Image (cartoon, rainbow, N blue to C red; front, side, top):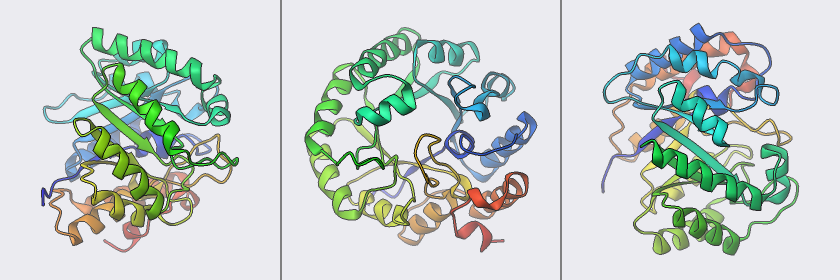
Length: 296
């Protein structure tokens, strides 16, 4: 077994986008420093979106400009349009993530545009990123369903993946945005995706809405997934989905994978300490993780 799985820590972006109140840039920098000290090397720091829609991301430029660039540490931002890419570039970031939805209704809620328009938009984002030698990962939202009733459609997912890969994207993220996946759905889709796109690096972004996040992760690992998104303490969720819950917790994911023999190289105690620190700042209601309060 190739016992290395890369974690992308998304707590500062996905984790904070749905909270009320403010978390200062200084607090965010403290968390970033702690994550690096704990062994996290891939950190999504913010989304470069309209702060009127997602107020917690109003600090994106200030945060990015104050991060010390360190060899071996990748900092990235989430973008959804050309302006977002330019903002990330102007802050010195050379890595971005972006995504579109397979659900027309969620696309309108999240991006304020339909799926066809978001595909055209994505093409522009990829072109700008390539022109500026930026690393890019593109994803699909809601691949295992969405809360408003849109059903899981494997054919649509495959067709959208073909379109994105046709743009020249080599890293793809599959997102369980609403947390509706289960092991059977995970297996059904990944079996197809891995066989069709064997030369593409597949990442997985899971939410723990119905308590199946870690079970779904366990299932995904059998398909050779080598990159997962996690969030310290299990914070996170979409502002545009009712009762949205957090990502799988970084600590819980590390604990699971190390118990399976994966060599993560991350200090789970230090991550847990950061989660408890953050909990005091924003409140416990945003946290779905279990391990961070058990490992001292």
